[in-house]
Length: 80
Image (tube, rainbow, N blue to C red; front, side, top):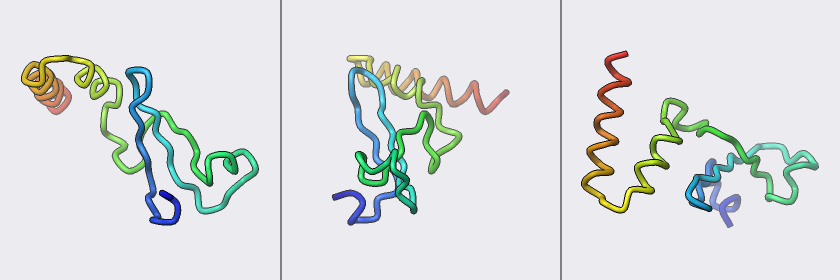
């Protein structure tokens, strides 16, 4: 489905973490089971995004606290 729509990257939330898959133009044998998608650790479309920090924020049951933690992290990484 995603490949037919030419979706370059697909993210799934599984077991309190992200599973990120990126579409490869050529389908080597190892990607056939995933219909041409390779599982990757970090987004190729958003390479600067801190996936682990985002996952930690999503685990927070309080949306306001999660948003504040995210903003705090953004400020600290920008000032580095």
